[in-house]
Picture 1 (cartoon, rainbow, N blue to C red):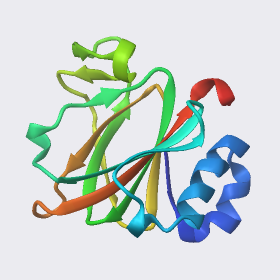
Picture 2 (picture 1 turned 90 degrees about the vertical axis):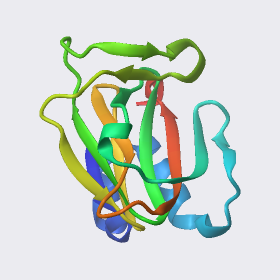
Picture 3 (picture 1 turned 135 degrees about the vertical axis):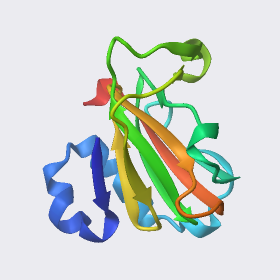
Length: 156
């Protein structure tokens, strides 16, 4: 997991693989406030952006998740949310397997979960071994516009 701020991209971006830089540059150079809900291809099925809007919710109402095929760059355009994160272990019980259709596993719980707050400008990068629980409230529920850049892990 990587936690960063786009305002520091010029200094920190050089330390990241080129494919992650591609995703972050999309966020940095795109009019995100006017980007429509849905999928936006950057490089076909290899790199694409998913734009969504929703209300944040209490952590108890969200399930921890992970992916196997894609890395996530999660970025909040409007609003604020907490993302819980932890490292995947063999003890995590899968409660819903959607790998075949959505590259998504949901878990019953995540141990030793730490929280990060995403606000506009701040991003989190989650690899397949990073379990994360997005969309949680920070102080109170709010409307969130979010972009998740999906990057095929085989590009690393």
